[in-house]
Image (cartoon, rainbow, N blue to C red):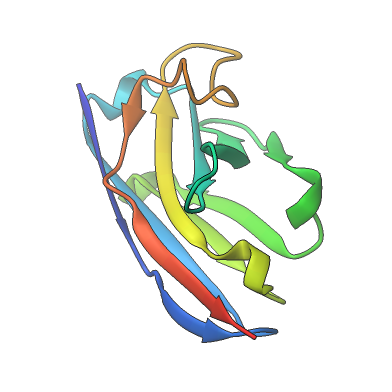
Length: 124
């Protein structure tokens, strides 16, 4: 099993920045990909970004490209999501995700491991 704990959410004005962190523990050697999803009230959980645990491959949903950056620190078993130029439509609960299989990290219904979520609120 893999446990994920997010931190770093909060309230920020439009145009501001936040950095989310996700610390992994447990069977971290089994992780293939880690990523971030978000879920706004009344909406489905949406893929935001992912990073290969080893290597440099990253993925982003179009709506955050150029504004969000995903990175990792393998020594700390931690993944980060730097969010710049935040917009009110970025408001959501952000969830960290991890999967031990290739090709599943983008699909909320299939992801193996989830964090508890952290609230991000962007005011206009």
